[in-house]
Length: 361
Ligand code: ZN
Ligand code: ZN
Image 1: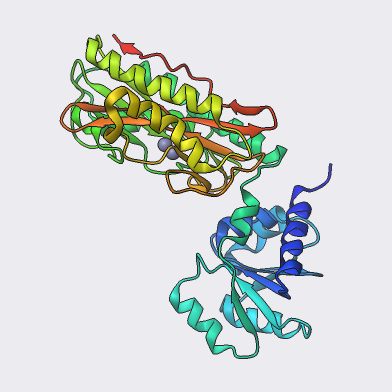
Image 2: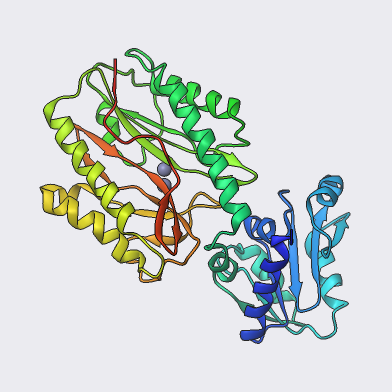
């Protein structure tokens, strides 16, 4: 099997040639990982037409050798990554115009670049992020594993939900189950929001105790080989009221319509509109206050965006979330979030956990 990272480096080189750049300085760690496999927390990467050079520090000397594929020159620095970077670039006489990750470089590091008058620094916003949108087979396989972990943790957690547990207590059950399922990490702090808290789209988990009749919204994910899943299910503790069932059904239908309609070649804003217009037509227009979805991969929120203002086209091979919701202050909220892969045949829904309103006895 060919190493997918070689194809990624070659895609970056095509963009460098098209933009008349001699080199790209990569500082964002997710981008470094995507190009080389290195998962450490200290790295700078230089890509030229001929070379890929990874700089890291002493702590990662062993790890970097085992993670990084052949074809990448590894430099383990004793002092500063930046001081060593000038040495590495200085030994590349043909390199003059150097692109950098302008979306991620902090101001202090940008000043370091400006102090090096020898090179012409060119901002490249989201150059690698755009390439990362389309997933290859190995990436889709990792996301599928992360989804399976999340779904197994969800089943364990729902089996233990009961009145009197606090939201943080439920998050503890969920996060233990994620670890038991093999998740390497948590892509974000798990959201467990009950009763009126479920009306806050970005609630975390707090001290509130679950009570009969509550909506309980769980939004969380797992990480497998660095790749994230991101799933939301909303259940009712006890028996759902007719109103809960009615509003839930609107969200479920909005999710189903968006999953069925989304496809590569569509603008992110048009995918968003499918769910938004349905929710609006059902009389809950203002209650869906966030975007329909986002890409997932090495980061849990990455390109492309499915939002009212997202004019960019969704590419073939992207894995995105479909997460419509309805939130009513004081009453509660519902979100159903799935992960879908955009194929030539349309969207393949990767999340299998069912979407009917679960009443937890
Ligand atoms: Zn989520
Ligand atoms: Zn999400």
